[in-house]
Length: 310
Ligand code: SAM
Ligand code: SF4
Image 1 (tube, protein in one colour):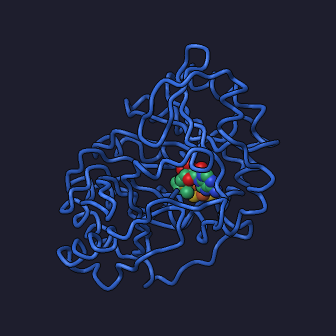
Image 2 (image 1 turned 90 degrees about the vertical axis):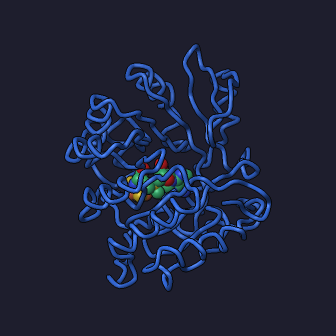
């Protein structure tokens, strides 16, 4: 499938729930979110239909995200049905807390990659960012995934005056576990724009501080060498990667979002019971993927990140 600018679209991020067991300051409103009426959320079968339609359109890589995907009821059954469709690359993005509970099934169902969010190794800072005292569980989730032989990447959002003094520790942690750490630039969303103004830290500043040397591009990340160890930087603000974007996103309410940072979404809800029609509509809406985002220039992401899935 291609968009109107000839970009090949091969990657779907499917958000299976907007609920979460954490409340990261940059992602969800502090007071939490209103629970959506049941009938607004796609059913189990409709989510599987979305994945089937994506496969028909040549999507090779499907990443399950949320909210927190591992809090979804029937998560393993859903993962099993999606896994049976046969994507080349099936991954999960998670905060890691429920991984110990599910890791055996996740491994059995052929998930090769798990991206785990970890912004701090300090209990107090972790709690400050996520509003929950769950660092130990997240760390256990990382260890269990590594033990299971799954490729783990750590995602760390860079937060000025909050976790910036921990970057060295986080790099050492990744080194010790022999996993890739990727620093992500904080993006302003409607609910976090004031927070983002205060705490945004550019990759450029961190790269300079560590005297990091550019090595290569790897998907959306630029890989740098820091003292002989490779670390990724994902820099949607300071170094847009729109030219090579191969992704679309679909939310748990069936909204297709061609670009994370543009405020346009198309409802697939009327088509979700028919895989062929769904595929036609996904293809049609994907054509409209904008050439670039204007985040930080003239718009913020209007939805909270937990609905879109990052
Ligand atoms: N709950 C899962 C997790 O935290 O990994 C999956 C969903 S979360 C929305 C996906 C990713 O988006 C996480 O790595 C999170 O750090 C990132 N994220 C959320 N809000 C963000 C923001 N405002 N700026 C940058 N990254 C953000
Ligand atoms: Fe939950 Fe992930 Fe958002 Fe944190 S970033 S609140 S873990 S969905």
